[in-house]
Image (cartoon, rainbow, N blue to C red; front, top):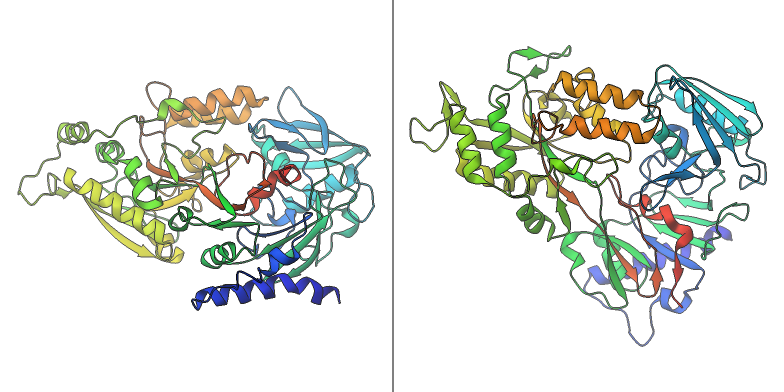
Length: 537
């Protein structure tokens, strides 16, 4: 009976979506199912994707936002400052190798069992051995010193380890089996009741939760595509829906638009070494055109980021100047205030680029100023950004050939061609991965083989810092120290374009508080402050 009762929301809503798709409208006199049956302590949400791998933090669940079902040792508040969650405090040894975390003693999992240091140690030990997206290679060992004290020992100092403590939800040692990802038990504000794969997820408030109690006893998450989510919002069948920019400006009776800033960015990564090399798998490395810093700097100066935001995202975004705009470790000195086409042309001319044959494309000796820009073919916004950026640059005399491809295609081309990538994280380690000479050619990060000894030194100092405050100064200098750095004012290995805003239609009267700036990807991070949500009185 439970399954049938819970199946009603998705069945009723999908029926309404099909009606709207067929051009039919509900009978206004009868009202919709949600309007007739709506309860003040329940919400129906169509806010994003379904996690294919389930809800296990030891394999990556929650790394892009609140894990919802689990608690973390630390968390970031609305101002992105690190505060306690399960922890009552932590200390780092003078050499940066030992992190000691004290735990609350009043926490229970949703099954009523107490959460102790053994569970924390088990979680991190399991995650380190999972071979998943969680990078815990820096962790040498973790042990429970006593029931409420955990000691982490690192292989080498790494200040960004604090972000692992922020992002990793704690699982129960006694109940972490093979099916945990589908039936998670945790100490977070909600517990999973039912998951209908491909359709919906139903959760209820966790009565054992130690933090502020949510105003909502039940949440139903519908896994709808953006168009279907928008149709459900128009029909009054959901209390919140994620929408794309093309729908965000349309009025929906009974709902209002909430825009959330993000570091969900898009940018162009350039190969910065000359052609001729190859990876161990035989993929070509390097590009003679983009290896010229004058080309990269001219592109960065000539691109009109504000026009990209307006034209591609209907104004729902912000110009991007780095991978971490607005984050605590961002250096605001990296901002290029105005597009300057004349200055871009001057940079190219001084570097020896000129249109000798009059075909509109610059040359430098026998080398033509043209290269290929690859984008993910099934992403319309990335396609539009790539085409628009190429059109903006064409009058400079730089010919950018835009090519769509699968991720497999991109993997073969990304070391010798420019690529339109998207990043954005709550962890400054992402900057290290993108710009360190040690990560050149490894995975999807530094595919352009960028290297700068001064940048490396700043970032190594940032990692070895024993406090976040000390580390922030080095992260900022790595971007630009007044003379060099990995930003557009320095070596310009990227041309960052835009930061997307995440857009949500929210039912009038529903107060979702102040969401903090969101990372790459949408959906689950919006629930980060779920305990603050309420109906306005």
